[in-house]
Image (tube, rainbow, N blue to C red; front, side, top):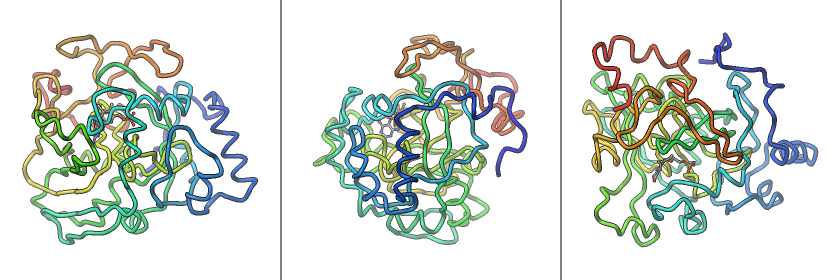
Length: 325
Ligand code: MTE
């Protein structure tokens, strides 16, 4: 479902200051006739930032869905692709080089649990079944209080749910990352509950904003940002947006996520952005934008209330804190 009326926070597309390099690159690609070609050829011509082309899903750049607009500048590509959280490769933000070891093509994905149609297929075949790719400009708010605004390429997660055809008992979608400590050295740290797991209610998973991203900045996803396929849920703190997904399981039990297992008091299931609810160790009222380092006020649901507030109507009548935890 597309947004038909403009949310209060939105500004027009022409007011968004584009990221020059990015736009120029897209224009150039179009002019050079690369639009719609396999990614590898297009991306290698670009010699992109900090990324190895590892997957073969697509046509890039995909058409932008103009229903999704920003209230801030796009984050420079270099910042968004070199300042990343991917604990499988270490707890620093500077792991993008190590993440290049992850081989993401081919990449088998399993869909199982309470579904009519269990399947195992390559990520590129999955996307072919549930695509056309589109581009969306989304804001991203990490629980650590940094934020970015990036163009993701991908497909609505609702398309995967439809393909899987969940049985009526299924209430949640559990998503699991790969497990390969030989490649991902962070996974040798056995105090973490690997593999990384996240979950959504099916209502959340079929909300129009929930997005399965296969690319960023008009190119295939670099390994460090979660190639070949990752979740993007822009109204929730970034840790919900699980990277490099191997398994989608439909279940009647609420999944316990990676961070919830580690510290459920600080990182709970809902994780909806809420500036009124401080993290136990810091305020969530403002956010620092990657690139400019500008501080901005954080908004409830990261500014996406028109699309998602209804999901939680009456759910937490006495305790708004649970919108976060
Ligand atoms: N997914 C996996 N598998 N491993 C991770 O460590 N980090 C999460 C999320 N998805 C993480 C993950 C966190 S804390 C954030 S903020 C976002 O990815 C960061 O996405 P980015 O690095 O593309 O900005």
